[in-house]
Amino acid sequence: MKISNLCKVSALAVSLAVMGAPSSANAISVSDMVNKVVAYIAKKGASKMCIKGNIFNGVVSIRSFEGNLCNASAGTAGLALATCLEANTEKFNESGCFKKAVKKLGLSGTEGTAAILAAAKTAMEAEITKVGSNVAQMACAKASTLPDGTAKTIALSKCPV
Image (cartoon, rainbow, N blue to C red; front, side, top):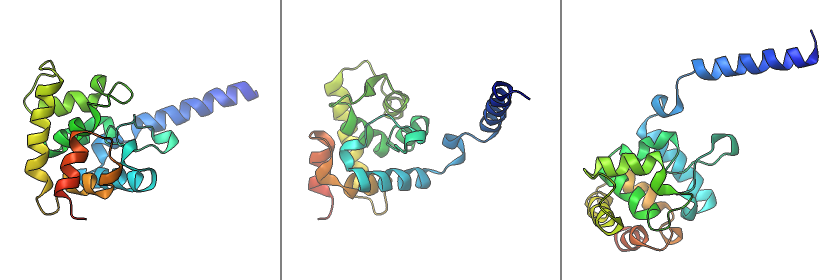
């Protein structure tokens, strides 16, 4: 078999294996997603929470897992929006995370930034003080390194020091 044909067969085999494997977003629990994001921001800083996820480059952000973490609860939706919308890192407002988060908060996404951030702040504040909340786990991991804005203000005021 020629080298080029071997490469094609190998690429096809890898593609079929990936397509046949369960999607990481569907196969992973919310708790596992949170743990992966927290581990990543512990290494890189919470300022990296909003970048586009890339499993091949080891980037695990709140936007990873097809944005499903942004839909896990109103609080996680609020955290995602309060952290990422103002900075609009890598076109956050066009991401699956953004779309799922605004929907989780009962919004359409066309309300305007101020209205979306107000809803996000309310949702985040409601959950961040709950014991064991995913929001507290992510926001408090590196609160001081969150991008300046709504989420950082809430995290610094609500997270234990």
